[in-house]
Length: 265
Ligand SMILES: Nc1ncnc2c1ncn2[C@@H]1O[C@H](COP(=O)(O)OP(=O)(O)OP(=O)(O)O)[C@@H](O)[C@H]1O
Image (cartoon, rainbow, N blue to C red; front, side):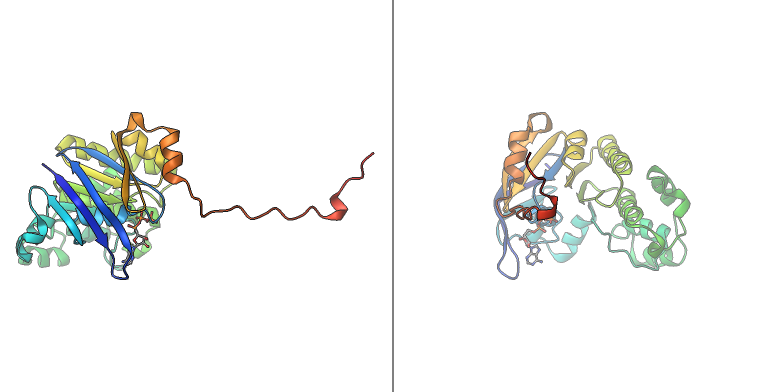
């Protein structure tokens, strides 16, 4: 069993209810996309799945364990089996790409090995191989601050692939990429997950990419799951309801200027 949320709720510090009563079961090896409008709770949901956020109600089981009943040391061990790809990877600007990628295994390496790795990258070949999949092998020694937003996202993905986690979570992983690169990158992520039996859960704003790459789609709105369907069953009716925004009103058109009004004949 990969992960289970039972009546999970999350209230952020300022009292905002980001999630309410979420029930969800994802089995090992599944590939699931989470879609929904801005502010729906997608990142909060991934935060619960990563044990980065603690539910304020209900329960979370990750890889068969309740992270919040573990000692902090055991929780760290659990987290080393969970890869989290951020929309904007929090990488130190001056860090070299090779070091950023190899840092994916810091949770698995001891302190001594990790410190040595900071000075002398220990597995240059491994880092190059994973970057090559994402068409970034030539940026191995670049500093993170020299990369574009889309390149940085790919370094964040390379780091998670190098980590080789059991559960891979990705929060808007391709939002800064052009459509071709975004498609290629999702293909790499899905191929990695499929070939290793890794469970992959990604939030995406691009619905067409979600439908093309993920067999199961979860629609989230106002902190709740509004549908959980195979991709083939997600139709425009479901999507229109998911993204309906009653708050947005188009501004009224300006009145036509008198000089543009044509006289009637
Ligand atoms: N740290 C926080 N403190 C207070 N409220 C927060 C915090 N993080 C998120 N929220 C609120 O929780 C709700 C869900 O936010 P979340 O980031 O999970 O949505 P999202 O679906 O990922 O949005 P987006 O697609 O815009 O990234 C929103 O109302 C947001 O304002």
